[in-house]
Amino acid sequence: MIPSDFRGKVLVNEPLSNWTTIGTGGKADFLVFPEDADELLKLVCTLENSGVRWFVMGLGSNVLFPDSGFRGVVIKTDNLNNMIIEKNLVKVEAGVRLEALLRKAAENGLGGLEGLTGIPGSVGGAVRMNAGAYGYEIGPHIKGVLCVVEGELKNIEYRYGYRFSSVMDMVVVEAVVEFEERERNKILEEMEDFRKRRKKTQPLDRKTFGSVFKNPEGKKAWELLLEAGLPGTRIGGAMFSRKHANFIENTGNARTEDVISLINLAKEKVYEKTGIKLEEEVVVVKEED
Ligand SMILES: Cc1cc2nc3c(=O)[nH]c(=O)nc-3n(C[C@H](O)[C@H](O)[C@H](O)COP(=O)(O)OP(=O)(O)OC[C@H]3O[C@@H](n4cnc5c(N)ncnc54)[C@H](O)[C@@H]3O)c2cc1C
Image (cartoon, rainbow, N blue to C red; front, side, top):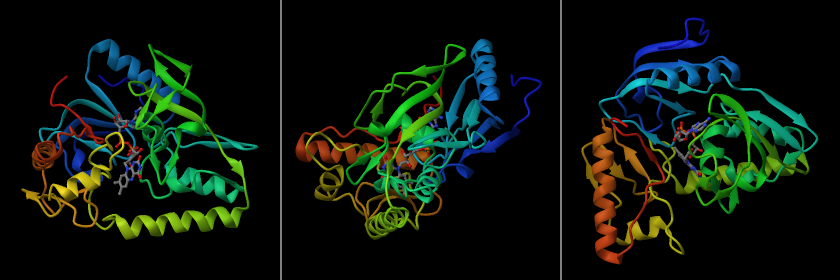
């Protein structure tokens, strides 16, 4: 199943709840950490050719795995962690924490993405869904993306929209991110301001996966959820946050099933009240393909 010369770490029967920020998810048959881009490519090709189910994840900050776990191989990109700065461009591998990218850029007098400070995901996860916050998006800054496509590493034309990109169904290996030259201390100060704003409005001391729903056209999901009375609503160990209506907290022993039931309840309530169909922002992994 996994190539015999695979050098990276392999965990067998590993609880995915240990690797998601919401702290839910059953056991993966295998959780593997390729050492570099070539090993990731080879692994994906081998799994594809042998018909084994696989899933790539970054830092698990926007994903819900079933309580029954994952029959197959979950690939974690942590070891793809190189960054090279060339003038105002940073070539960065998918497993780098977004926060580490922003900090390294700032240290080198490169800014323009300060609003993304505090998003606890990887570059791969952020590029895939065009992560954004406070009017900033990573999309406009992406000048190149290298992905695994049909058994090869290929440069892909990157297009993006709200929580959408042209690489949604590919494995992102590396991206080139464009920054603006700015004064280092100014960038670091602004990053700190955004961090404080986040702390004020989001339940950062709880286990969550960020926004549950995307904002419908012209509306804010959190306002719709607030108006429908969701904050404080609980199913099992999952509860809609009282601090930010579009967050679900794991109050201690939540299962993915609780979270999904709560998501469905919220969709029903908002639809009944407004006729608006909310759509998940979080990626929900199915039991089987
Ligand atoms: C407290 C909190 C605050 C948040 N705030 C924001 C916010 O302000 N804005 C925002 O946009 N998001 C926010 N998020 C959500 C999340 O951090 C982002 O969506 C992030 O980009 C997900 O990255 P990840 O590495 O954790 O992805 P994962 O959760 O590991 O995976 C999510 C999806 O990305 C895919 N993926 C991951 N890596 C790759 C790769 N290399 N190639 C292809 N696909 C890949 C996975 O297959 C999966 O479909 C927040 C989350 C939390 C917990």
